[in-house]
Length: 434
Image (spheres, rainbow, N blue to C red):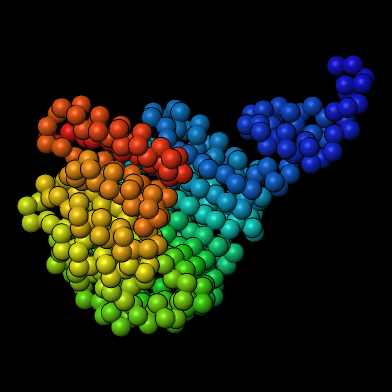
């Protein structure tokens, strides 16, 4: 390197060097830091280390040891700068890796709890603690480590994602309460506890869960299962989060308890107090009208509804009454609708009426037995300005393997409406469902 080149690099502002370092991996950053004292100082710029995703995905013992040690070393060296941390444990089928993961997490969380004062977002999804590979001892030790960590960090945390943990009721409430152990009020803005508890548990009736949720006073976004919903929980949200709550996402799975009775008055009160509230319902294999009728109350400000059969079928399932009687209740609020069902039930006309009725609907996704002409009818209504879809995705099921004729029709429709399709997120295909 000549003197001119050297002086050019020497004169680079700190901001430029930081930008360069941001494009480098950890190894290259460390190598670059050995060039000179100035570059070594850049290595310890907070902006380089404020966000991190740590993935534990080893397939054999030796690689996993390297992964775990590397993660702990990173936290010891740069954990003080972390603002956003996501931890993923991908291999949840190996008992040896699970043990190594638990031991590493104990060290990682302890070091992070001592050094870090600025962590805002923490995500550790899909732990699946109900699996056999988590022995009682490993599970208890891990929950203790996580609880102590959240107890230290809870005051500053703004977002916590612990979906898919699948804990017992007692363990889950211990984790939630650890966030408020130092104070009686939690100012966390985002909380995701979807599939947080083991299935089959009627969480909605548990007093400890009510007490744990009572400490949250600033929730803007809450994601949980319908097995957690009750009049009491809605009253708690209305009392504590009425000025902040804007997004409530509720997952309802066939194996989650969902037979509880929730009063429409509780929903109405919450909707009146939390004026910007938008509710999302995600139904998986819950398609019986009797179930949906009890859950989808007209007082709910539902903006997004997804009903999916997940490729299962049941002769008792029918969406006709749901489409014609329940969903029209949300004609003033519904923005996104997803229907995926494989029963041989043609609802072309009913769905057209629903789309025209819901003036705010901008997202429509259908995986169902429909006629190809349905696509043209929707696009024609869009062209006439009678609906305003931004996303239109459709998979048309047919009961035979040959799709040439239907594919040709779809292509002709595509060519006919080329003037409006480029302005949409459009997808249409024919799928043989045999």
